[in-house]
Length: 436
Ligand code: UDX
Ligand code: UDX
Image 1 (tube, rainbow, N blue to C red):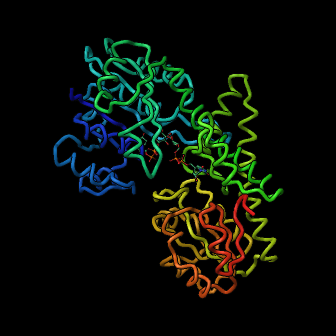
Image 2 (cartoon, rainbow, N blue to C red):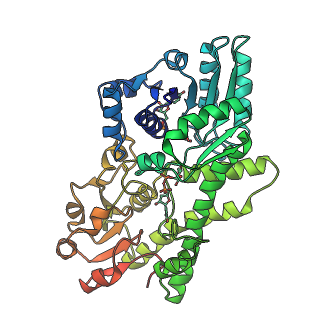
Image 3 (tube, protein in one colour):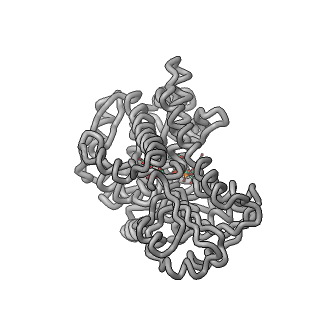
């Protein structure tokens, strides 16, 4: 059954969710307070790069199931269910800044009408107990007689495969304390034919932070194992395969590298630490996860320094700027941190990324770096090549040509993208993570 949905915040989470909901037949209106973004969307331009998203948006706009507006009133007025998908950025102490959520809760409260039941859904990643605060705020700022329920419905999509993640999720978590609200949420998700877990609001909120922290824990675990591999001559890829074949463990998220980044893991782990501290149950294990992650990059730069001796005035090509492949997102990217570390040491850095150049320049993240037009262009006369993001197309580059173009054939592969035997056979001095 088709339902009328409003989504406030048309970023990665809001826009992809809106497009997918429309695609299964719901009537969706996406609200965003960024006028430029809404104008782009109204012109049929997609402000972010996400495989499959453009087709999905255009198709559903044409079918009149997906609309855009800057007006919260217009969005909320005709909707049965209102999703909140605005940012929840970190504060300097790691705790979450909930001011956008609070502001949106007040905006919703101001336009809710008497006797029109609405379900307000928190899709943003928020600390446990935020649902209670959202409900209090709406109650305080709305007219008497307004009826609503607040639900937590965390989103687990990964950038780069957000559309399939949303269309075919492992599970859908619905946290609600009211049967009426939960029943409406179940209807929305019926067409997705995915397993649904119904919980109370607090548990649903905790699931998101606990899930992301666990995935980060897996990454730091394998990175710590990679160090033992380096010290002992073992191969971390083989170790990960061996432990990952145990179905209780699983091979996913056991890829060693220069650490996790992106707009979610670093902030969510910091938030979970802050939440647990606040609740009087400090989560020391997660502090170690963070520490290992930060050290991965430092150790990588140390190894580069060991080989090149002095980094000053050395030409270093860096392939990759995005926090992972198949996205243009450069927020909290370890690749960007590597570029900045090298620039700080006065190395002459040339960068190339298939999708991330524009945003890295726009946000002034790589000032001082030279911009190459291709992977091969970047390595001309380079003393070393650093691979910081594992774009598939980098492994398809002709490495004999890379060797001809480089000044000295040194490769530092921070993502274990290349086959050591292949590059070494071509005469490269090759360093990777946790592999002899
Ligand atoms: C964000 C949060 O970072 C994440 O924690 C949460 O799970 C979902 O929302 P994302 O979708 O990646 O993730 O954020 P972003 O791409 O920055 O998009 C947020 C959108 O909200 C922006 O388009 C922004 O203009 C809009 N916004 C922000 C509003 O419409 N109203 C506001 O008050 C604030
Ligand atoms: C993550 C969660 O996976 C998703 O469920 C949640 O909704 C948002 O946060 P995302 O940030 O898009 O998604 O990317 P993800 O694929 O999880 O990768 C995060 C970081 O971990 C990247 O920097 C990636 O390079 C790194 N990573 C991932 C590793 O270093 N090793 C791995 O094995 C997997």
